[in-house]
Length: 140
Image (cartoon, rainbow, N blue to C red; front, side, top):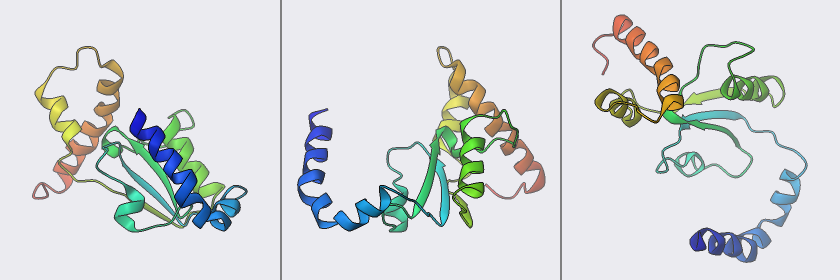
């Protein structure tokens, strides 16, 4: 926790003053051009990977970068996609990931005792994976 607090204090002291105008502008509005959907993997940093500034990406992160089928009752991912498109007016949607994601592998290798929410969430990923294999079996 100390490293996070120190990092935040360093941001306030060093980074924020250098970009005051940008942060003042972003305090009242946002107009990202892209919705970027990726996994929760701590090694994936969308803004760093794409070299974007604060406010340029609207980001969804979840286990397996899953986008469930649309439904008014689907939850946070659907609501966030809907908001990004209908309210923010994003023009591009990027789903960043690989076919062989670690969370899927782990789900296949170990039982999900004590992880019912993760297990239910990943069921959607398996359905997509199965459909993908039927449509494009040579893609791995």
